[in-house]
Image (cartoon, rainbow, N blue to C red; front, side, top):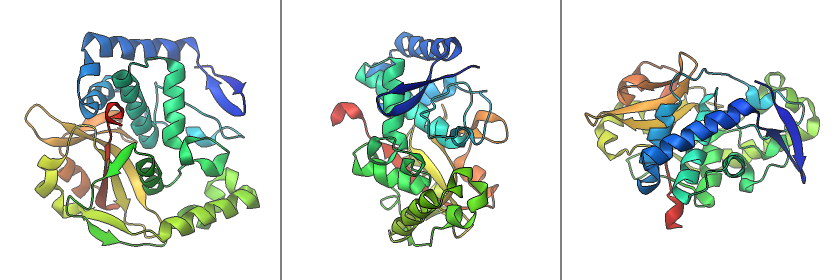
Length: 277
């Protein structure tokens, strides 16, 4: 796939090629055929996410460009890209904005602090920071505490302590900016639902709920994210972009967590329907 970099005002975006446009049009056609615009936001997310099954997993795409660039691929994903893309697609469907430009604007709103791309440090790199910032702006709601989550504090410092893993942190100013982000994030109280209690609350989870898997590594917040999938039998699974198999459904959420020892629990954020704001 080829890309064109476009400077629109002060915003550096990736111009769509014909394959991206065709994939987007296909998703919007499916939304119209299934009359998804009349359904709850979470159900729209699940329906559109299922249309992306089989897309390959691709790590590190957002860090590949020398300057921060608004990238919105629909043919390959890492776990966060998948969640952002599906939510932005669904928001557009329920709002009646089915333009590719609208999708890019909504992805920018989700991905960056205060909804605006302003360099590498403006990206919400830590996913609990992503949840907090989008919750403050009324796009999602952290429901972990009401599900029975327990308070957890940890000193977040993974990126600054592993500077060589992130080429953009070679610049001292950017590294210092990330350190300030980590300090602010470390000062917040977080509620986490322990891994062995997920089945107890499973029926309270809705399609499209965002599940962030809390890292066992104490300097990191989250190791993976995905969407709650509700099967025809009512069982709660996970719709996600997995390093093992790309976009797929893991049929049982509790089993998924138990089989991943790097995860100690979950944080759950519920996307808020923009029609009700």
